[in-house]
Length: 326
Length: 245
Image 1 (cartoon, rainbow over the protein chains, first blue to last red):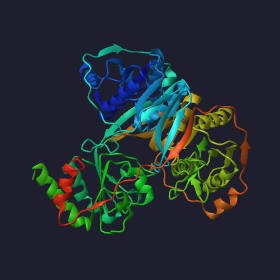
Image 2 (cartoon, rainbow over the protein chains, first blue to last red):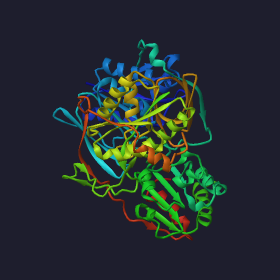
Image 3 (cartoon, rainbow over the protein chains, first blue to last red):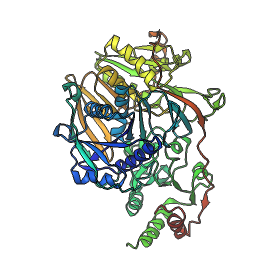
Image 4 (cartoon, chains in turn yellow, purple):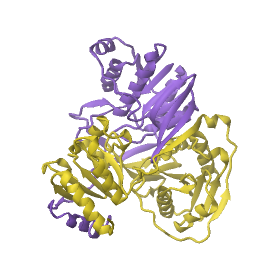
């Protein structure tokens, strides 16, 4: 009856979200009075996997073959479901990363499991039913969901649960493999394109975002500089990506990416309800806008009323002074 | 190509979200419903692909008769026929099984969904459909093209994209940027009235999740306004009070 957690890597390095989901799975297993087993798929070396021991993981299944070096949705789902069955895991937990979003529904369908995406608390069991909370209506409401299948798949959003160290001594790593049919390889990765100088938006702890108040794409230099000083990812509002000023991948909001960083700085964004839906679960929100009536101020923690072109350079200077740079 | 586009009928993005029956049901009173924006992108992609003149587009939804206005809108945008599975969409598993049953009986080359619906946000149906039909699936496609019976898809990943090839038939969940949004013109709206809209009975399947109760998210505290000439105070508050830098 254990808990199985999927551990994701990028080029052999465990993702930040992997430590978060490991911490969540460990705490969920404690809640369910059972053990947690981790599953890594892809080519990750043993030293890297041992890091999970610092987060309360004591057993790892390591599906490390060349065929699985890059993401193959169907094959990865088969490995995950097979490992869940082998470990008699009735709860499978994944991070709601782009690959997690692809895997979780397939794994749930294979196991006929109840699936909850983006859970915001730990599971609770009453009688035979598990209950868990998640956001719905694009963060405008919270739903308490009962999971009626005896098998469950749960995902948590990146940044939603803190990675908490809990040293556990030596980790037992077991090699894991499964015979996969050729039909599990219906997709093939041809090329991976990474913007290496950029921080990934869904995983970023700090996000600097700007809207139409910036007046044009040529003015994004101060946004990028502010993001650089903070080690932040850049984002934008929908009108900005619709106008082609910034790529769609930067659009946060109800119809874009939903994020929950610890700090969100919104510059020249009025705060339409659709935008707020995508960012309202940020821990701290700073709004810079020249319109004191901008709706964004209603959900902000800190606000500055004024001209972004004056304030942002001052903020950059103040942050550099604070960090002792420049 | 035979293309199936899965349509979700959702509250308009500006809707105020409230609940009834002791916070157990979404309050539809006064709410304007629309095609889920991501599904509209999927449909726009299908219209682009069907520009070859050798393809047909079917749209499908699971819902009661009130969803037919949304299906007519999809027909006006460019779908050739519509199917409504006459049942309440109880959860993603229920919906995926209904669509899979129809797809199995009618064999499509490409099945498109939006990356997620803006009401329940699960993004689950595409992957479940893939599994139920034994087909490859891509959950968040930023670009999609089909050539010689093979699809080339750009899939979003953290900090970049993955370019993959996939065999057909394929299930793909589409994201912004995959196609230019299509707007129904007068001819489309006129012809939508006479295009076929078939109502079919649901298959028997039990949902696996149930929403027991809804809550509103906790309210955020009041904003602390900082003078634009005192930016150091903001940096100080972020460091000592919010502890985020």
